[in-house]
Image (cartoon, rainbow, N blue to C red):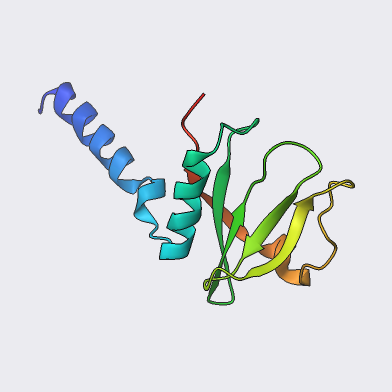
Length: 115
């Protein structure tokens, strides 16, 4: 019988290799540029986040804004603004998002680590 430490080590390796880390998802260069811009700004409260969503073989990116009453913009793969699904005075965005927005499965690809 093998050492239980071996199985523990194997389990840990499997766990970490199966998890999707933010760095596993390459974003377009313009989204990376937006992240670099966010890093130069004061820390948001809550911290800035970039989410990736895929639907119908298209990829979208949602970037959080700083604080209250500001729109959170959704960008397409070419970094063009599609709409603002959330934020603003009402918290419901600009009202111009396509119907599929609620069906997108989101993955966090970056969160500002600064405090």
